[in-house]
Image (tube, rainbow, N blue to C red):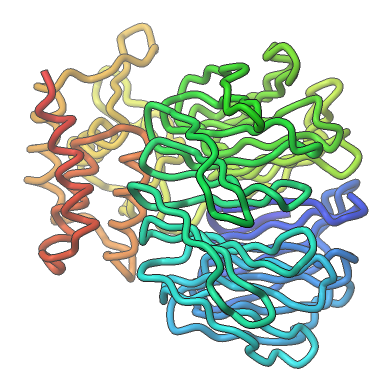
Length: 465
């Protein structure tokens, strides 16, 4: 049961019997949730970032960086339709009746498509990447979120823009309340916001101390959970906007969602922990410790199982006992080695995965060590424990890396590799590494506003006292 690269998402079928995963290995895969057996492999020509079931569970929708979304028969794995954009497809979802899908792309467009004919029905235009798109519970309205600092509401039948919901930075998450009367958005401006879906009026700002990367309603619509890079998830009263509970973590929180009965929240962070929390009290109920960054986490329809997607694995967990039920492991890609354990003679003792480019067996250990130290921001003590590097140590190892870094073997597409490593370094607050990769990207694209902004952010952190 293996993918060949990172897994970006994992979810259950409506009946809870099948798990669906999407990976950078250019496939989405269907698995038997009971046995972990691979049932179907759905192949794209680029990384697959989105995958979901139709409401009846018979069809799968995938979105890929190969500029397509595709519809598949869940039972046979047969490709049914191909829906084409001009750029990478970032998100894709079904309407509540399953007759229409919406796709969101980096071409700045969300499109509505007829499931049976694959006919494009509407185009919904933004002024930046479209990060999310979904239907209202009654299927009459579409909600999109974009890097243009807005979320927008559209009439699904006509494609007319109904409301524009403005943030102060990129909007990464957007969803309807269960009754469709409110909209919840999450942004890099460090806020989630609640809006009246009909009027577009902002009702409440839910403030974090860093970027908000996930936000969703409880099943009854009374509570909101948000996940942030300030190392917290938080619970809020949806009516008043009052913060109810703060759920602390040891790293950036990328995933947070409610159980079907609304009594429990699952969260996932960058320090490899998935946690279950009691909504009423904020008490931590279970901690599911894995060995990879948790990129997604969600409950099965009956609430008895949690599926988690890591950089290297997909796992199923029993919510009552924290027992690991199944593991869908991703085989290490050829370009990936890892966190290195050095002995006192500076020889490699052990490897764990952190994304080092392909190297030969006789790699210069000084170069490899410099990469790991700069990439992780930590070093090992003589007792084998981890300690953070000082700013001066960052600079020293960074100079070694830059001096020796031109000799290692690069993956086939260095730009994509540097983009991935820059984002991962930012997520880990490895600011020297982030600056290193962003400066490489800016050599070929010196006017890129997003890269310049991110490089300046890294510089700010490096120059902080």
